Image (cartoon, rainbow, N blue to C red; front, top):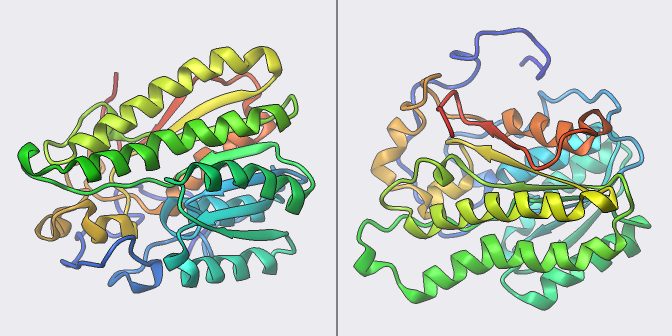
Length: 297
């Protein structure tokens, strides 16, 4: 397999034939995907762009968060990984990869819908890593519901707490400890611009994340803290098999993009690396769309 720096045709770089129908109970496990995603363990090559950085990554056990954690470690960063307790097998496997790079990794299982836990992550990072200068919020909840009359208040509330409230709690707790030069990177989605009719609650939260991040970028700029957003398109992760998509949609998942395929988690990781690194020192309030070529506003 080639690394992320190898020149290739993006339309054929990864799987183009879609994915088999599969369902996992939420939140879903990376290791149980019928078709394994590329998390970068075999394909991401580090170049020392984040040496000495101290990062907190939510959703760091699987999917995009996992790929970001591996890339950050390969670039020289130490990390704290936040994930749900039932995702422990995935967290253990990514921690092994990170330690093999000679980096420090602290595992912090819990549920970001709990305010106390979300806020505690900042203090875990400070105590385990000796500080915090990079905050990456990836963890998200996505459940497809075809009819608004069947979207329960419980799901609506949990989606907002996972995707928006946790961001608010963690950022509010982190700002007092983040030094100038720090980077906050949030995760929106193509759904913020082109929402699917069955993802009303999810798409709404992703638009909120985008707007909140742009406001924070302006507020925190005088402190020397940059805030940016990555907005992925359809990416093959356990989220899709755990209710994020209807099972019958998986064989065509990603085919509607101009590149005519779904993305892989490792293809998202370089965007986060760039926005965390000092290479992007004059970039704040930006949304970097990694969506296979779909136009955005």
